[in-house]
Amino acid sequence: MNNYICRTFLFTLLTFAGLVGLHFLPSISIDGHQLRKVDLFADLRPEELDTLDTDTIALPPPVKPAFVDTCRTGLTCIEDYADSTKRGMSAFYQALGETKEITRSVRIAVFGDSFIEADILTGDLREMFQSHYGGCGVGFVPITSQTSGYRSTVNHNFGGWMSHAVTDTARFDRSKQGISGHYFIPQPGAYVEARGQSKFGTHLDTCEIATLYFAAKGEVNIQSTINKKFIGNHYFEADSVMKLSRAQVKGRIGRIRWTIEKADTSLFYGFAMDGQHGVSVDNFSLRGSSGLSLRSIPTKRLAAFNRQRPYDLIILQYGLNIATERGKDYSAYKKGMLTVIAHLKECFPQASILVLSIGDRDYKTETGELRTMPGVRNLVRYQQAIAAESHVAFWNLFTAMGGNESMAKLVHAKPSMANYDYTHINFRGGKHIANMLFETLDYGKKQYEKRKEYDK
Image 1 (spheres, helix red, strand yellow):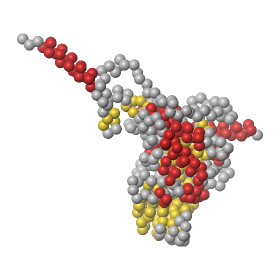
Image 2: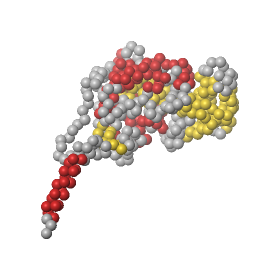
Image 3: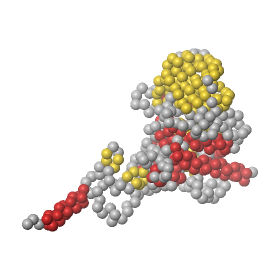
Image 4: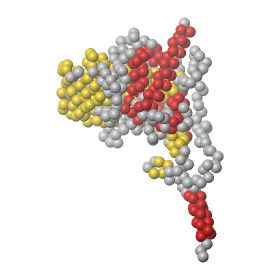
Protein backbone atom coordinates (compact mmCIF):
# COMPACT_ATOMS: atom_id res chain seq x y z
CA MET A 1 0.00 0.00 0.00
CA ASN A 2 1.37 3.43 -1.02
CA ASN A 3 2.18 5.89 1.72
CA TYR A 4 0.16 8.92 0.46
CA ILE A 5 0.61 10.87 3.68
CA CYS A 6 4.39 10.79 3.31
CA ARG A 7 4.18 11.82 -0.36
CA THR A 8 1.78 14.62 0.40
CA PHE A 9 4.05 15.92 3.14
CA LEU A 10 7.06 15.75 0.82
CA PHE A 11 5.19 17.58 -1.97
CA THR A 12 4.07 20.29 0.45
CA LEU A 13 7.61 20.70 1.74
CA LEU A 14 9.02 21.01 -1.78
CA THR A 15 6.33 23.55 -2.74
CA PHE A 16 7.04 25.59 0.38
CA ALA A 17 10.79 25.53 -0.32
CA GLY A 18 10.16 26.58 -3.92
CA LEU A 19 8.02 29.56 -2.91
CA VAL A 20 10.59 30.65 -0.35
CA GLY A 21 13.28 30.36 -3.03
CA LEU A 22 11.28 32.54 -5.46
CA HIS A 23 11.64 35.41 -3.02
CA PHE A 24 15.38 35.54 -3.71
CA LEU A 25 15.02 35.85 -7.49
CA PRO A 26 15.86 39.29 -9.01
CA SER A 27 12.99 41.77 -9.30
CA ILE A 28 11.07 41.58 -12.56
CA SER A 29 9.35 44.48 -14.33
CA ILE A 30 7.23 44.40 -17.48
CA ASP A 31 6.70 47.58 -19.51
CA GLY A 32 7.87 49.66 -16.56
CA HIS A 33 5.54 48.01 -14.07
CA GLN A 34 7.17 46.29 -11.10
CA LEU A 35 5.85 42.77 -10.51
CA ARG A 36 5.08 41.88 -6.95
CA LYS A 37 7.73 39.71 -5.36
CA VAL A 38 6.77 36.37 -3.79
CA ASP A 39 7.08 36.69 -0.02
CA LEU A 40 5.34 34.16 2.21
CA PHE A 41 6.41 36.08 5.31
CA ALA A 42 5.29 39.55 4.16
CA ASP A 43 2.70 39.88 6.92
CA LEU A 44 5.28 38.94 9.56
CA ARG A 45 8.00 41.35 8.47
CA PRO A 46 8.27 44.80 10.13
CA GLU A 47 7.30 47.62 7.77
CA GLU A 48 10.29 49.14 6.00
CA LEU A 49 10.03 52.85 5.35
CA ASP A 50 11.64 54.49 2.35
CA THR A 51 14.36 56.81 3.55
CA LEU A 52 15.29 60.20 2.15
CA ASP A 53 18.95 60.93 1.52
CA THR A 54 19.09 64.04 3.67
CA ASP A 55 22.75 64.59 2.89
CA THR A 56 22.03 65.15 -0.81
CA ILE A 57 21.11 68.82 -0.47
CA ALA A 58 20.33 71.02 2.49
CA LEU A 59 16.95 72.69 2.59
CA PRO A 60 16.92 76.49 2.43
CA PRO A 61 15.81 78.07 5.71
CA PRO A 62 12.05 78.65 5.90
CA VAL A 63 10.90 82.14 5.04
CA LYS A 64 9.11 83.99 7.81
CA PRO A 65 6.30 86.19 6.50
CA ALA A 66 7.02 89.87 7.03
CA PHE A 67 3.64 90.66 8.52
CA VAL A 68 2.64 87.50 10.38
CA ASP A 69 4.73 84.93 12.19
CA THR A 70 2.92 81.85 10.95
CA CYS A 71 1.07 80.57 7.93
CA ARG A 72 -2.64 80.00 8.38
CA THR A 73 -3.42 76.54 9.73
CA GLY A 74 -4.23 74.04 7.02
CA LEU A 75 -2.55 76.07 4.27
CA THR A 76 0.75 75.39 2.54
CA CYS A 77 2.05 78.91 2.09
CA ILE A 78 4.42 80.22 -0.55
CA GLU A 79 8.06 80.58 0.42
CA ASP A 80 9.22 83.91 -1.02
CA TYR A 81 12.99 84.12 -1.50
CA ALA A 82 12.95 87.52 -3.24
CA ASP A 83 15.98 89.78 -2.87
CA SER A 84 16.41 93.43 -3.82
CA THR A 85 15.40 92.61 -7.43
CA LYS A 86 11.90 91.83 -6.10
CA ARG A 87 11.26 88.82 -8.32
CA GLY A 88 9.12 87.18 -5.67
CA MET A 89 5.36 87.61 -5.40
CA SER A 90 5.08 91.34 -4.59
CA ALA A 91 4.84 92.54 -8.20
CA PHE A 92 2.02 90.12 -8.93
CA TYR A 93 0.11 90.95 -5.77
CA GLN A 94 0.37 94.64 -6.58
CA ALA A 95 -0.89 94.11 -10.15
CA LEU A 96 -3.73 91.93 -8.89
CA GLY A 97 -4.84 94.75 -6.62
CA GLU A 98 -4.95 97.14 -9.58
CA THR A 99 -7.08 95.11 -12.01
CA LYS A 100 -9.67 97.88 -12.19
CA GLU A 101 -7.12 100.63 -12.79
CA ILE A 102 -4.69 99.23 -15.36
CA THR A 103 -5.59 99.31 -19.05
CA ARG A 104 -4.92 95.62 -19.75
CA SER A 105 -5.61 92.28 -18.12
CA VAL A 106 -3.30 90.97 -15.41
CA ARG A 107 -1.58 87.99 -17.02
CA ILE A 108 -0.38 84.68 -15.60
CA ALA A 109 1.75 82.31 -17.68
CA VAL A 110 1.90 78.70 -16.51
CA PHE A 111 4.75 76.71 -18.08
CA GLY A 112 4.55 72.98 -17.42
CA ASP A 113 4.48 69.41 -18.65
CA SER A 114 1.73 66.81 -19.15
CA PHE A 115 0.53 67.38 -15.57
CA ILE A 116 -1.36 70.47 -16.83
CA GLU A 117 -1.99 69.27 -20.39
CA ALA A 118 -5.38 70.15 -21.93
CA ASP A 119 -5.80 72.95 -19.37
CA ILE A 120 -6.04 70.56 -16.42
CA LEU A 121 -5.55 72.63 -13.24
CA THR A 122 -5.00 75.89 -15.18
CA GLY A 123 -8.56 75.88 -16.50
CA ASP A 124 -9.96 75.92 -12.97
CA LEU A 125 -7.33 78.39 -11.78
CA ARG A 126 -8.40 80.72 -14.61
CA GLU A 127 -12.05 80.34 -13.66
CA MET A 128 -11.32 81.20 -10.02
CA PHE A 129 -9.29 84.29 -10.86
CA GLN A 130 -11.81 85.57 -13.39
CA SER A 131 -14.70 85.02 -10.99
CA HIS A 132 -12.93 87.04 -8.28
CA TYR A 133 -11.11 89.70 -10.32
CA GLY A 134 -12.92 89.85 -13.66
CA GLY A 135 -11.76 88.93 -17.10
CA CYS A 136 -12.82 86.48 -19.79
CA GLY A 137 -11.44 84.19 -22.46
CA VAL A 138 -9.15 81.18 -22.52
CA GLY A 139 -5.92 83.13 -23.02
CA PHE A 140 -3.13 81.92 -25.33
CA VAL A 141 -3.62 78.81 -27.49
CA PRO A 142 -1.05 77.36 -29.96
CA ILE A 143 -2.14 77.25 -33.62
CA THR A 144 -2.50 73.46 -33.53
CA SER A 145 -2.62 71.08 -30.59
CA GLN A 146 -2.53 67.34 -29.92
CA THR A 147 -5.00 67.83 -27.08
CA SER A 148 -7.58 69.97 -28.89
CA GLY A 149 -9.99 67.05 -28.89
CA TYR A 150 -10.27 66.85 -25.12
CA ARG A 151 -9.39 70.36 -23.98
CA SER A 152 -12.70 71.45 -22.51
CA THR A 153 -11.96 75.16 -22.14
CA VAL A 154 -12.03 76.02 -25.86
CA ASN A 155 -13.42 74.50 -29.05
CA HIS A 156 -10.34 74.56 -31.28
CA ASN A 157 -10.21 73.69 -34.99
CA PHE A 158 -7.47 74.18 -37.56
CA GLY A 159 -6.22 73.04 -40.95
CA GLY A 160 -3.40 73.58 -43.43
CA TRP A 161 -0.50 73.94 -41.01
CA MET A 162 2.93 72.37 -40.68
CA SER A 163 3.56 72.10 -36.93
CA HIS A 164 6.95 72.06 -35.22
CA ALA A 165 7.66 71.57 -31.50
CA VAL A 166 10.83 71.66 -29.45
CA THR A 167 10.15 68.05 -28.45
CA ASP A 168 10.39 66.90 -32.09
CA THR A 169 13.23 64.47 -32.66
CA ALA A 170 14.30 66.11 -35.92
CA ARG A 171 13.84 69.11 -38.22
CA PHE A 172 13.16 71.62 -35.48
CA ASP A 173 14.85 75.00 -35.72
CA ARG A 174 15.22 76.38 -32.19
CA SER A 175 15.86 79.88 -33.52
CA LYS A 176 12.32 80.00 -34.92
CA GLN A 177 10.35 78.91 -31.86
CA GLY A 178 7.94 81.10 -29.97
CA ILE A 179 6.92 81.35 -26.33
CA SER A 180 5.14 77.97 -26.31
CA GLY A 181 8.11 76.08 -27.77
CA HIS A 182 6.35 75.75 -31.14
CA TYR A 183 6.20 77.40 -34.52
CA PHE A 184 3.71 76.81 -37.32
CA ILE A 185 4.07 77.32 -41.07
CA PRO A 186 0.87 77.95 -43.07
CA GLN A 187 -0.01 76.41 -46.38
CA PRO A 188 -2.30 78.35 -48.75
CA GLY A 189 -5.70 78.76 -47.16
CA ALA A 190 -4.60 77.65 -43.69
CA TYR A 191 -7.03 78.54 -40.95
CA VAL A 192 -7.46 78.39 -37.20
CA GLU A 193 -10.79 78.77 -35.45
CA ALA A 194 -11.76 78.96 -31.80
CA ARG A 195 -15.16 79.03 -30.16
CA GLY A 196 -15.84 79.95 -26.57
CA GLN A 197 -17.18 77.31 -24.23
CA SER A 198 -19.93 77.58 -21.64
CA LYS A 199 -19.66 74.04 -20.24
CA PHE A 200 -16.33 74.69 -18.49
CA GLY A 201 -16.25 77.88 -16.45
CA THR A 202 -18.51 80.86 -16.62
CA HIS A 203 -16.27 83.34 -18.43
CA LEU A 204 -15.25 81.45 -21.57
CA ASP A 205 -18.29 81.74 -23.82
CA THR A 206 -17.21 85.15 -25.10
CA CYS A 207 -14.11 87.33 -24.97
CA GLU A 208 -13.40 90.98 -25.76
CA ILE A 209 -10.08 90.83 -27.63
CA ALA A 210 -8.80 88.20 -30.06
CA THR A 211 -5.16 88.34 -31.16
CA LEU A 212 -3.10 86.32 -33.65
CA TYR A 213 0.71 86.30 -33.18
CA PHE A 214 3.16 85.76 -36.04
CA ALA A 215 6.43 86.88 -37.63
CA ALA A 216 7.09 87.34 -41.35
CA LYS A 217 9.49 88.88 -43.83
CA GLY A 218 7.14 88.85 -46.81
CA GLU A 219 3.67 90.31 -47.25
CA VAL A 220 0.93 88.96 -45.02
CA ASN A 221 -2.82 89.08 -45.60
CA ILE A 222 -5.05 87.59 -42.90
CA GLN A 223 -8.83 87.41 -42.99
CA SER A 224 -10.79 87.58 -39.74
CA THR A 225 -14.33 86.37 -39.15
CA ILE A 226 -16.14 86.99 -35.85
CA ASN A 227 -19.28 85.06 -34.91
CA LYS A 228 -19.46 83.79 -38.54
CA LYS A 229 -19.48 87.37 -39.85
CA PHE A 230 -16.64 88.56 -42.08
CA ILE A 231 -14.84 91.48 -40.43
CA GLY A 232 -12.06 92.32 -42.86
CA ASN A 233 -8.51 91.73 -43.99
CA HIS A 234 -5.38 92.51 -41.97
CA TYR A 235 -2.60 93.48 -44.33
CA PHE A 236 1.07 93.67 -43.34
CA GLU A 237 3.77 94.90 -45.70
CA ALA A 238 7.02 93.05 -46.29
CA ASP A 239 9.76 93.74 -43.75
CA SER A 240 13.44 92.82 -43.85
CA VAL A 241 13.32 92.12 -40.10
CA MET A 242 11.28 89.12 -39.03
CA LYS A 243 9.75 90.84 -36.03
CA LEU A 244 6.84 89.67 -33.93
CA SER A 245 3.54 91.09 -35.20
CA ARG A 246 -0.09 90.64 -34.36
CA ALA A 247 -3.52 90.89 -35.92
CA GLN A 248 -6.19 91.94 -33.45
CA VAL A 249 -9.94 92.39 -33.32
CA LYS A 250 -12.20 93.60 -30.53
CA GLY A 251 -15.85 93.16 -29.69
CA ARG A 252 -18.14 90.59 -28.15
CA ILE A 253 -16.42 87.53 -29.58
CA GLY A 254 -17.94 84.08 -29.23
CA ARG A 255 -16.22 82.59 -32.27
CA ILE A 256 -13.11 83.77 -34.09
CA ARG A 257 -11.68 82.41 -37.33
CA TRP A 258 -8.38 83.49 -38.85
CA THR A 259 -7.72 82.52 -42.49
CA ILE A 260 -4.27 83.04 -44.00
CA GLU A 261 -4.78 84.48 -47.49
CA LYS A 262 -1.10 85.23 -48.01
CA ALA A 263 1.93 84.83 -45.75
CA ASP A 264 5.32 84.69 -47.44
CA THR A 265 8.27 83.52 -45.30
CA SER A 266 6.16 83.49 -42.17
CA LEU A 267 6.03 81.76 -38.80
CA PHE A 268 2.87 81.70 -36.70
CA TYR A 269 2.84 81.06 -32.95
CA GLY A 270 -0.70 81.11 -31.61
CA PHE A 271 -3.75 83.17 -30.82
CA ALA A 272 -5.28 84.55 -27.66
CA MET A 273 -8.78 85.27 -26.41
CA ASP A 274 -8.80 87.80 -23.57
CA GLY A 275 -10.75 90.42 -21.71
CA GLN A 276 -9.79 94.09 -21.68
CA HIS A 277 -9.48 93.95 -17.89
CA GLY A 278 -9.41 91.33 -15.16
CA VAL A 279 -7.12 88.29 -15.34
CA SER A 280 -5.84 86.10 -18.16
CA VAL A 281 -4.21 82.69 -17.58
CA ASP A 282 -2.11 81.16 -20.36
CA ASN A 283 -1.37 77.43 -20.39
CA PHE A 284 2.02 76.56 -21.93
CA SER A 285 2.09 72.80 -21.38
CA LEU A 286 4.54 70.66 -23.29
CA ARG A 287 4.30 66.88 -23.02
CA GLY A 288 7.61 65.27 -22.04
CA SER A 289 9.25 68.57 -21.10
CA SER A 290 11.66 69.01 -18.19
CA GLY A 291 11.52 72.81 -18.44
CA LEU A 292 15.10 73.10 -19.62
CA SER A 293 14.04 73.80 -23.21
CA LEU A 294 12.77 77.23 -22.11
CA ARG A 295 16.34 78.50 -22.15
CA SER A 296 16.57 77.74 -25.89
CA ILE A 297 13.80 80.19 -26.83
CA PRO A 298 15.61 83.20 -28.35
CA THR A 299 15.90 86.15 -25.99
CA LYS A 300 14.76 88.60 -28.67
CA ARG A 301 11.59 86.61 -29.33
CA LEU A 302 10.63 86.27 -25.66
CA ALA A 303 11.35 89.96 -25.11
CA ALA A 304 9.12 90.76 -28.09
CA PHE A 305 6.32 88.67 -26.60
CA ASN A 306 6.81 90.53 -23.33
CA ARG A 307 6.33 93.87 -25.09
CA GLN A 308 3.12 92.73 -26.75
CA ARG A 309 1.84 90.37 -24.04
CA PRO A 310 3.52 91.21 -20.70
CA TYR A 311 3.12 88.82 -17.77
CA ASP A 312 2.72 89.67 -14.12
CA LEU A 313 3.29 86.13 -12.84
CA ILE A 314 5.19 83.21 -14.38
CA ILE A 315 4.54 79.80 -12.80
CA LEU A 316 6.95 76.94 -13.50
CA GLN A 317 5.45 73.45 -13.01
CA TYR A 318 7.92 70.70 -13.89
CA GLY A 319 9.41 67.50 -12.50
CA LEU A 320 7.48 64.51 -13.84
CA ASN A 321 10.03 63.95 -16.59
CA ILE A 322 13.01 64.37 -14.24
CA ALA A 323 12.11 62.33 -11.16
CA THR A 324 13.31 58.75 -11.04
CA GLU A 325 12.24 56.09 -8.60
CA ARG A 326 15.22 56.47 -6.29
CA GLY A 327 16.99 59.52 -7.72
CA LYS A 328 19.27 61.30 -5.27
CA ASP A 329 21.43 63.72 -7.20
CA TYR A 330 19.57 66.28 -9.34
CA SER A 331 22.39 68.81 -9.30
CA ALA A 332 22.70 68.87 -13.13
CA TYR A 333 18.99 69.63 -13.41
CA LYS A 334 19.30 72.30 -10.75
CA LYS A 335 22.12 73.97 -12.68
CA GLY A 336 20.01 73.96 -15.84
CA MET A 337 16.92 75.40 -14.16
CA LEU A 338 18.96 78.20 -12.63
CA THR A 339 19.83 79.28 -16.18
CA VAL A 340 16.17 78.94 -17.22
CA ILE A 341 15.02 81.30 -14.48
CA ALA A 342 17.83 83.76 -15.25
CA HIS A 343 16.68 83.70 -18.89
CA LEU A 344 13.06 84.40 -17.91
CA LYS A 345 14.13 87.20 -15.59
CA GLU A 346 15.98 88.88 -18.44
CA CYS A 347 13.08 88.56 -20.90
CA PHE A 348 10.25 89.36 -18.46
CA PRO A 349 11.82 91.90 -16.08
CA GLN A 350 8.51 92.91 -14.48
CA ALA A 351 7.16 89.42 -13.73
CA SER A 352 6.97 87.59 -10.43
CA ILE A 353 8.22 84.00 -10.74
CA LEU A 354 6.80 81.07 -8.77
CA VAL A 355 8.35 77.58 -8.82
CA LEU A 356 5.90 74.74 -8.13
CA SER A 357 7.46 71.57 -6.84
CA ILE A 358 6.59 68.22 -8.32
CA GLY A 359 3.51 66.70 -6.72
CA ASP A 360 3.36 63.24 -5.25
CA ARG A 361 4.10 60.31 -7.55
CA ASP A 362 3.64 56.75 -6.37
CA TYR A 363 4.92 53.33 -7.42
CA LYS A 364 4.34 49.73 -6.42
CA THR A 365 7.03 48.15 -4.30
CA GLU A 366 8.14 44.56 -4.67
CA THR A 367 5.55 43.60 -2.07
CA GLY A 368 2.77 45.31 -4.07
CA GLU A 369 2.38 48.31 -1.77
CA LEU A 370 1.87 51.84 -3.11
CA ARG A 371 4.58 54.19 -1.92
CA THR A 372 5.87 57.65 -2.82
CA MET A 373 8.97 57.46 -4.96
CA PRO A 374 11.92 58.49 -2.76
CA GLY A 375 13.33 60.26 -5.82
CA VAL A 376 10.31 62.58 -5.80
CA ARG A 377 11.01 63.78 -2.27
CA ASN A 378 14.64 64.42 -3.18
CA LEU A 379 13.61 66.43 -6.26
CA VAL A 380 11.32 68.63 -4.13
CA ARG A 381 14.35 69.65 -2.08
CA TYR A 382 16.30 70.55 -5.20
CA GLN A 383 13.39 72.57 -6.60
CA GLN A 384 13.16 74.55 -3.37
CA ALA A 385 16.90 75.19 -3.58
CA ILE A 386 16.46 76.38 -7.19
CA ALA A 387 13.90 78.94 -6.06
CA ALA A 388 16.01 80.06 -3.11
CA GLU A 389 19.19 80.53 -5.17
CA SER A 390 17.25 82.32 -7.92
CA HIS A 391 15.56 84.58 -5.35
CA VAL A 392 12.08 83.76 -6.60
CA ALA A 393 9.05 82.18 -4.88
CA PHE A 394 8.36 78.49 -4.17
CA TRP A 395 5.20 76.48 -3.48
CA ASN A 396 5.52 72.94 -2.19
CA LEU A 397 2.86 71.10 -4.18
CA PHE A 398 3.98 67.78 -2.69
CA THR A 399 3.16 69.00 0.82
CA ALA A 400 -0.05 70.73 -0.28
CA MET A 401 -1.32 67.47 -1.81
CA GLY A 402 -0.81 65.72 1.52
CA GLY A 403 2.73 64.37 1.22
CA ASN A 404 3.51 60.66 1.08
CA GLU A 405 1.07 58.49 -0.87
CA SER A 406 -1.29 61.44 -1.47
CA MET A 407 -1.45 60.61 -5.18
CA ALA A 408 -2.78 57.15 -4.35
CA LYS A 409 -5.49 58.80 -2.24
CA LEU A 410 -6.51 60.93 -5.23
CA VAL A 411 -6.58 57.87 -7.50
CA HIS A 412 -8.79 55.91 -5.11
CA ALA A 413 -11.08 58.80 -4.18
CA LYS A 414 -14.76 58.48 -5.10
CA PRO A 415 -14.97 59.81 -7.77
CA SER A 416 -11.32 59.42 -8.74
CA MET A 417 -9.20 62.55 -9.03
CA ALA A 418 -6.12 61.02 -10.68
CA ASN A 419 -5.15 58.36 -13.19
CA TYR A 420 -4.03 54.82 -12.44
CA ASP A 421 -0.48 55.61 -13.49
CA TYR A 422 -0.27 57.26 -10.03
CA THR A 423 1.42 60.21 -11.75
CA HIS A 424 -1.17 62.38 -13.51
CA ILE A 425 -4.23 64.08 -12.10
CA ASN A 426 -7.50 64.27 -14.04
CA PHE A 427 -9.82 67.28 -14.35
CA ARG A 428 -11.35 66.68 -10.91
CA GLY A 429 -7.87 66.48 -9.40
CA GLY A 430 -6.92 69.62 -11.29
CA LYS A 431 -9.82 71.50 -9.73
CA HIS A 432 -8.81 70.21 -6.30
CA ILE A 433 -5.21 71.46 -6.66
CA ALA A 434 -6.26 74.71 -8.39
CA ASN A 435 -8.46 75.49 -5.40
CA MET A 436 -5.51 75.03 -3.03
CA LEU A 437 -3.21 77.16 -5.20
CA PHE A 438 -5.77 79.93 -5.61
CA GLU A 439 -6.44 79.97 -1.87
CA THR A 440 -2.71 80.23 -1.22
CA LEU A 441 -2.25 83.07 -3.74
CA ASP A 442 -5.29 84.91 -2.38
CA TYR A 443 -3.97 84.56 1.18
CA GLY A 444 -0.57 85.85 0.07
CA LYS A 445 -2.17 88.89 -1.59
CA LYS A 446 -4.13 89.72 1.56
CA GLN A 447 -0.99 89.47 3.68
CA TYR A 448 0.84 91.70 1.19
CA GLU A 449 -1.89 94.33 1.48
CA LYS A 450 -1.88 94.14 5.28
CA ARG A 451 1.88 94.59 5.26
CA LYS A 452 1.58 97.68 3.04
CA GLU A 453 -0.94 99.21 5.41
CA TYR A 454 1.24 98.32 8.40
CA ASP A 455 4.31 99.96 6.82
CA LYS A 456 2.56 103.28 6.14
